[in-house]
Image (cartoon, rainbow, N blue to C red; front, side, top):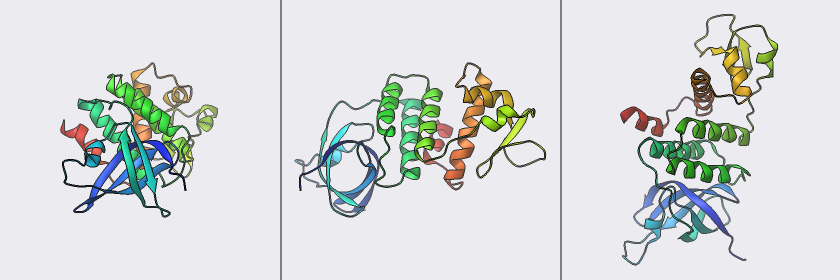
Length: 227
């Protein structure tokens, strides 16, 4: 069988045994893939050194099961150099994918967008638009489309978002964020010219992602809090 060579980024790795780690990759063709990596303490072995976040890789995986083996890896281009909050944002994107993506599910637009986001973060673009765009695309790839049509059809000024129902008017006190109708309509129209709209969008995405994570915290968010 001919080896399948493809582009990839390392999302996360963890030790398995003395000479093995499990690496999770975002691949161009197969989505998220986990693989065993055999590493050596020899100075001639640079496989472990190559497996760094935000570095474009060319990899070859082998094996028939869900857990593959990394057969070959090389750097395909320069790493994206991130620093400060832009670095933490990169870790956030990685952790979202590790926690939410299924294994071996091709995500047509996610790989290219992720690479574009890393470029923008490395060039110190404004962070919030990058994160919101990626979060929106990630939710779409997971089959979750936020329907704003109900909001624009109502006369109510405030709404709750319930994951199983969507938006509902504020008729009683719930332990959920309240969203301004005008802000939600602006988000639907991709009009982020006002700061309050951007804040609303951030709160909404955080609520939805927290629900998908089952309320379990993201480690990358703690980096922002500690800075």
